[in-house]
Image 1 (tube, rainbow, N blue to C red):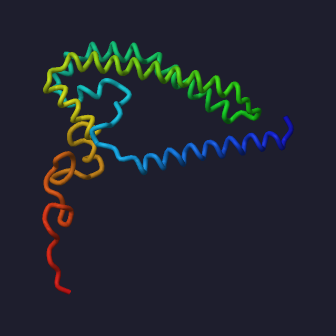
Image 2 (tube, rainbow, N blue to C red; image 1 turned 30 degrees about the vertical axis):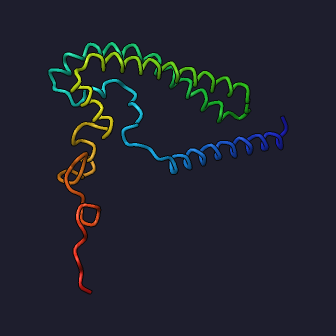
Image 3 (cartoon, rainbow, N blue to C red; image 1 turned 30 degrees about the horizontal axis):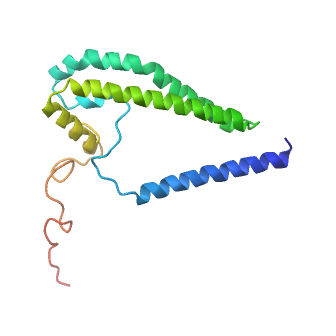
Amino acid sequence: MNRSKLILVVLITSIAINLIFIGGISYRASAVREPSLRPFPPSVGWAVRDLSEERQAELEPLLEASNEEIRPMRQQMFQATRRVNELMRADEFNAEELRTAFEQLRSASNSYQALSHEQSIALLSELTEEERRTAQEFMQRRGPRGERDGRRGRSGPGFGPGGGPPPDGFGGRPPPQRDF
């Protein structure tokens, strides 16, 4: 392949990747999402983080078995990602190899996700109704109680889920009158 064709292929690939990123950013900016529709974290351990230490200890064998089962799939996914990245950086671009690598990545990702969902179902079926609600609340706030906002110095009334009244001028009460 001569140099001008290589430059043309790289340019077209670059434009395609940029259009994908622009489309993704545009979609995220314009999509209206409900806060309760967040994706699941990569590990099923999220479901027990707000439970008592005793209950977590009871569920530990199930969590360990889940981690052992999913670890090889996670490694396959990371290896497939590395292969895609290597092919994208290669001096000699090979579209067919990259297409195959993307297919392998998609397959590994789908397998990982399917097993993760099955493990989530198995774990959630071991929880009581109240514990499932607690797990769902964890998903909505995306972290253990008080930890996420606290790390950023945002703790106390008004921060976190249901953390108190809104500040002045933000829907709670009208802002104070000022004389100028």
